[in-house]
Amino acid sequence: EVQLVQSGAEVKKPGESLKISCKGSGYSFSSYWIAWVRQMPGKGLEWMGIIYPGDSDTRYRPSFQGQVTISADKSISTAYLQWSSLKASDTAMYYCARPMSIGSSTDPFDIWGQGTMVTVSS
Amino acid sequence: DIQMTQSPSSLSASVGDRVTITCRASQSLTTYLSWYQQKPGKAPKLLIYAASSLQSGVPLRFSGSGSGTDFTLTISSLQPEDSAIYYCQQSHSPPITFGQGTRLEIK
Image (cartoon, rainbow over all chains, first blue to last red; front, side):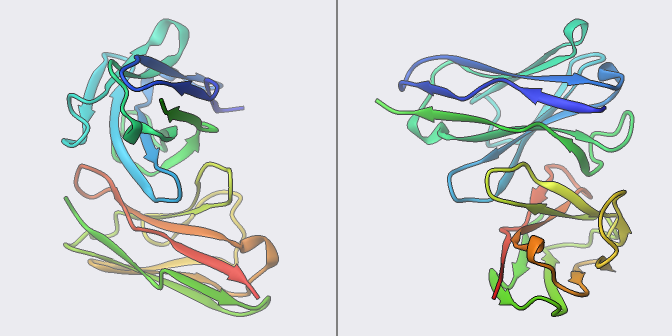
């Protein structure tokens, strides 16, 4: 079965760092891009950026550039989203998602992780 | 960024009704338009891609149409399990953008 499994919910304080993960299985992880999508409480979906695990080519939505870091370790089929200094406004559900086709960074997302809830509060 | 506008923002309909949700893009997408369904506490689920192609496993009562800037998602005969939020998404030009969502309730 093709699936993405994300790490568990996190509760952090402002200023703390955090790295959440997304592990792929059932397919060639290196050959498909992995995107991260933010959903703030009660709000819609925002595409944050995307990485190609095969060569770590990474693209960010301009509003997220410098605010988060997307990375991947193809040897363990895992993508990451990290923050160096969290803010309360980072409180959201974060999903990883895989485009439908090999090598495509823009295809629709047919496989989604279950989501990781990040809560930032003092 | 390409702006995606859905209408209505919410609607309520009865089981068996035909329901239509509209999505308008700020510039032409040709047919690079997808639809997702999201139920509470769950990840979005792909329903329609390339404006009108039904994703594998999605019931035939769901259909999509349109091209350019105007698109529709139609549910031909509403079922209780269709209560959800529906999002359109463009993949014509990065960054990928989503509509604001349409909340569908069952009367």
